[in-house]
Image (tube, rainbow, N blue to C red):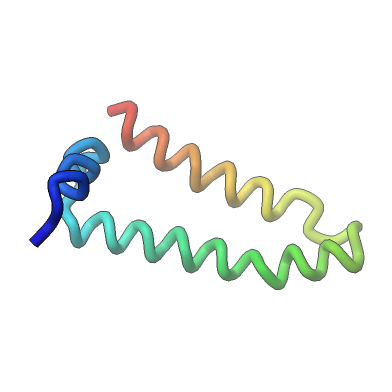
Length: 69
C-alpha cells in the first residue's frame, strides 16, 4: 500500500507506480554508466569533457518537461 505522500508524488509527476519505478531505474542506470566516464575524465580531462554534464542536464530536462505538461 502506498502512503499518501507517495500517491501525491505519483499524481504530481503524472505516472503510475510502475512507470515511476521504470523511469527512476533508467535514471539510476544512466548515472551509474557515467561513473567510469567521470573517473576517466578526472585522470585525463581531455576526454569526456561534457559527457557527464550533458547527460545529467538531459535527465533533468526530461523530468522538467514531464512535470510542465
